[in-house]
Image (cartoon, rainbow, N blue to C red; front, side, top):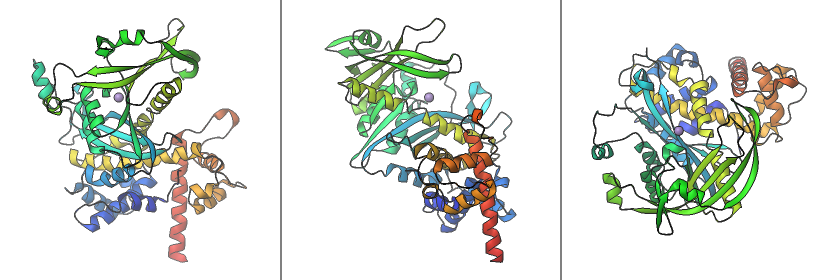
Length: 456
Ligand SMILES: [Mn+2]
């Protein structure tokens, strides 16, 4: 259940036990994090309140013990400590690009070689029952190296490749606690035999979208391309899906669902790690979602999902599809990090400092997602159970509104404070409006605190 903490309490909970070599550094991180959370999209000078705070923040980020891992590790650990139940981990990579004019040292090439930055690979944990964002289960940063020219296949497999980051993240997250099931969700970038081995060895389940439908699979001792295997499967059920796309607006698609069990053989060319592990054949299920009767000019929907979860009935196949539909939440996280926390506008002089601030902003981006999702999850809950009580009081006064009882009413007034007109045709407030409202409210609450501390 989402509960939004005061920025100071939140910073204490997320960073209060970070090991940075000196307890004063940890105190400073907590203080800086609380300031960052109050105005996530401001520059560092805009976030800190006093000149000495700004200098201390720069000194903190510059310290060699204050790394990406050291800042975010406690958050990752707390996220992984789950009680019983199923948790989804949506994994994906994003390019964090600091712009061609950024002079920071140590960055790698990106975006066709013109941009500079690094790749950030994140595993976002989601509760499938409520769609609540729990936090980041782990993250990896990588620098792109240009591939050597005329590289042989064996050499390429032995080299440290970019796709390896999917497996590294799974190793970092490790096996789930007792009574918990982790289900990793990956797009086509994660469809790799080594990734399946890592998942198996760490006891994660998975739903991965297949990249290559020509790859050879086995079924009843026979070898065939995956696409042929799919064509041989009986129809399990159909449904209608209403969705909106940029290209075609709202439309209803007719969907057919098929599923089956297959054996996936290891690739012929195997990396040294794969040879050492010795897994040569892996059994898994496939669920195919295919649009039929496609109107002219429309790209048909087609998902081929490879999964370790049991699929023997239409209901079980449906469960796999529902899990995979939650995958885009990791892309919302990327958006929260880039638009909400403006990670790519950070002006630090070295890649190490940019990594450190990315660690802090990643945890802050999770907070932004949680702030937003609280409105959707439990709209009828009492607002004072979800956000601090005096926020409700201050917002009520600022807005001149008679009552703010529920979470829905709180968010409506918060959006109004952020500039949303709240007219019938204006639709639901976007998250940027909500954040703007939140920033204003926070400043007002802060001013009241200052007044009573000095005068009271
Ligand atoms: Mn991707």
